[in-house]
Image (cartoon, rainbow, N blue to C red):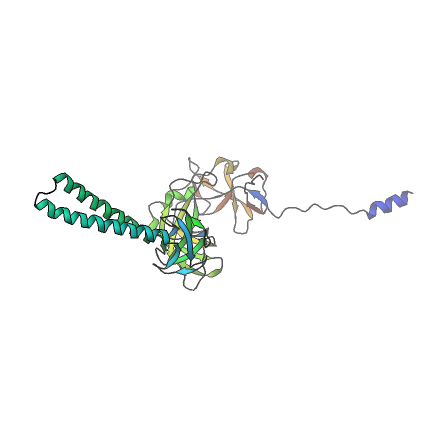
Length: 337
């Protein structure tokens, strides 16, 4: 019996719990401020000029001549309402104007012989002006029944179908500029001060995930002045010519490489600092995610004066539990369902 138990025990396989490939930690990019550096950030394509098109009058849609994805030229007819009622109103306004004009011309002659009073003359003159205004409005409404492309671009969204009744100012089509696109990325707060004021010297280069071996120059457009409360970063917007022959669409991903001008050193949080005797250390994270205990020198404000280079990554959480050579990854806050 003992032998069987022994054999049974020998035949059991012990469950192996797989160790995670890397440990999540909070990371921080060091700002030493001793020289210009180049940094790369994830980026997203956005439309350049974009507009939501709508009719300025109500009516039944008679025709729509474009679909989502179509490329259009400035002035191209995109959609048109049924104009039967508007045409009739314009003809009626034209007739009223002609009648008011005839009456006013007659009153001008009668005024010369003082057959009518000044009050009657002024009333006739006002009626002519009113009739002219009504005619102009009727002509404009007839013109507003046709929707034209405001600039060269592509139709990104169509919201209506033929024969639907459309209210005035109801969104009908979305159009995006064909010439320019915007590229946005998030700038960490510790780099914002160094970025601000040097926007003309950042030399941005953009690459798209669909074509990683090709980069395109871009220009600075704007930067938000309020940080995202969740990421403590600032949205930066660049603009560039749409690459010819490339189907670059809003929502596509890429990367932006920019030059960060040199500036003042950033403070290292106390939670990232280790001390052993008189030596001060931080956990330096290399490009492969491996950590190394690195000696640094700090001033009285926890600014690094020696030991790291501008842009180096360090761990700022769980530093007492890390070991040399351990692999780490950036900690991302999980969202609830």
